Length: 196
Length: 196
Image (cartoon, rainbow over all chains, first blue to last red; front, top):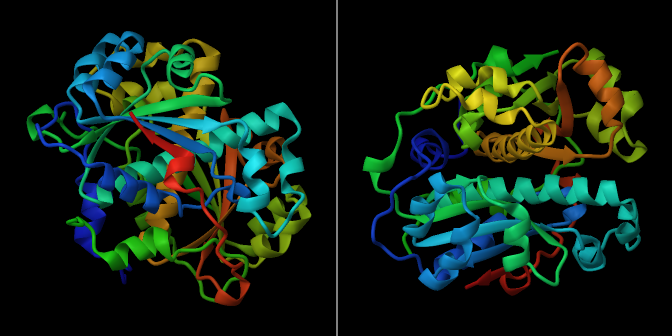
């Protein structure tokens, strides 16, 4: 079977990549964070709505602002990560659609229903969260995604005055292999998929 | 800046990959669909909960079952796609946690709250949907993801008797470049991200 992408890249992005719990003392530059965004932003979203918003906590000071809202088991690995990305989604995404989806100038009016707007923002912002993780790995970074935190408090702390809601957080840096768990099993094809 | 993954792979998975509207008459084998799953399943999920479930509609007969529930603008491109993947998420994911998350045998009891269970399934099932799209591209396939369909009807048609909910659908095959729109703009780093 021909692979469009070589085996080493498949390993880096999926097969041998692991969620990190301990981090090497090696910084992540702003330029690299921008490069990750510059890749992930090309991933597809519904009507190109692109609702993901990311706050990169790259200083000890900004990570301390997150600390009170973390589940205890997530504190140490967040405080020692070179960067913690707070990945959110913007409920006000429709305002950008005239620019992001020029094929249809009326697209911004498709999302008047608040449930549809919330579902669309969460679904597509999360797809972009998946692209973020894979893009970071593709550029040589390791990730440690976490959802154990107080979302409402994080929204107040980092997204005040906006309609952005926090989705998940993700340690970003270079992992210390000594902190990685044994690889857990995955569901087999026949358990998760059917071909009709 | 050193790239862990070569530029060609970054193009294939993100930069030059495009959502498809027209398809070449070239089949996709079950073995290739299994290879896509075998990559995507290694992407991280919360407590390795892995809630994504996929029904691959790979026959004209199974695609016809989907047809009545599609938004009119999604019919032609779905019916002509070699495969349409119905990506869902399983609200009953906690039952698999004793096997999927052996670090903590009590993990299956973390999700008794129905709102947390739904949010966890939707978030992590959608992350896996993002992994699916990138994994398919990495293996040389093109995708055409869509969310314009009647979710409740699709749930009844393809997930009856389960607690799986449809999330999005995705044409899978080899795209005909003549059906691709001009690349739409993306938000700049400063519009979508902040570094603190």
